Image 1 (spheres, one colour):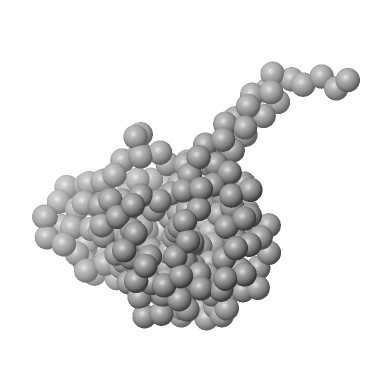
Image 2: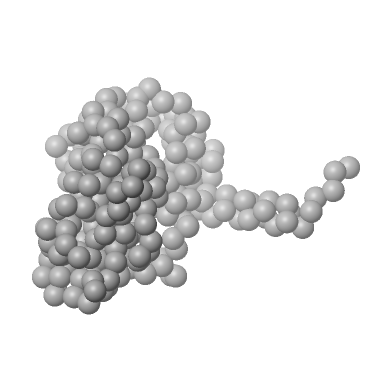
Length: 253
């Protein structure tokens, strides 16, 4: 009989605890394909999740006052409301920290960027297996679990600059700044890790691991940095160019 070390047993206990925690959660599925919807519901319930189903955007918006642990929605069902759903969730205090996963039959880079800017956490491209769906949802939920609301800061400030990490909004001297949600996430991340350098690849992997961009991530991050700097001042964000670019939030001297 193999002998388990205390460390192995502790790791197993932690994995069991994480699994048990993940499976006490309620998920909202927004999908009008009846067969796919039934497969998704069955697969998620088999994993221990409670599942509610809506077949229209209007129905989904009507039940959103109810608290969900995650929402997975077909972009074609939401139609023009797809980006609006992400914005609504992030700007509503009661739903600001609900993870959002989009289902789509096509993934253009512009569409991916727009969705992530509006607060989407992950994409599932049709056709996908139920195994892939469950794995991706579990991964998103684990990311949220690693930053529990009790111990993690909801806001971070430096002098007059403040970033709300939940609603993904920023302000300077209590005046709102015109930043996208992704820009607020980036600024908040760099402020939380003040004076530490990150490459564009590290930033994307930390903040948006589900965002698969074909272009060099540096181009996108640099564009966001330029936008942020134009609003908060050039001396707060630091850029180093050696073999590659790195970024940090630093205190102005």
